[in-house]
Image (cartoon, rainbow, N blue to C red; front, top):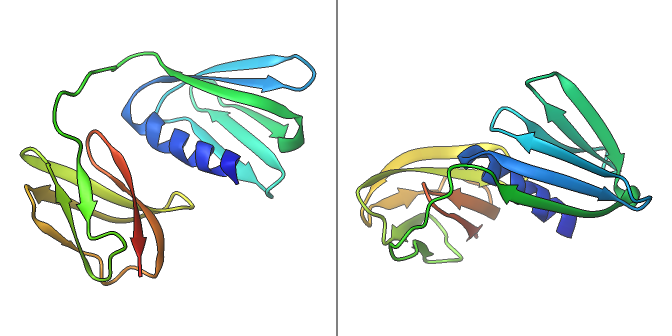
Length: 153
């Protein structure tokens, strides 16, 4: 489950900038990938991690039991933000959520834990977001600079 959370985080991370991902296998072999937003990392049959690199149409599959460690580092587009962190309330939420400390107009995307985009909107300031059409569950709310966890009741 921890690896699943990591991979989901990686998918959101890749959308923002290029990332170098290294997979360390139990037998000492290391595989390094310079990934961009067009590349994909996902699970296949809950047994394998699949890495698809679009630029050379390369696909590699790794048995989860063979993976010792995965690391990711940003390779470009790194920027320091001095603004106050964005937070959402209430959380858990029923029908309407608000994002606080947003600056200007920002695009906000809400994803299910399986990576599906379920809602996308533009928000200014503390404008409420209607999520009454979403099912009960845990979602990831992505702003321009942060990804937040939201629980929908």
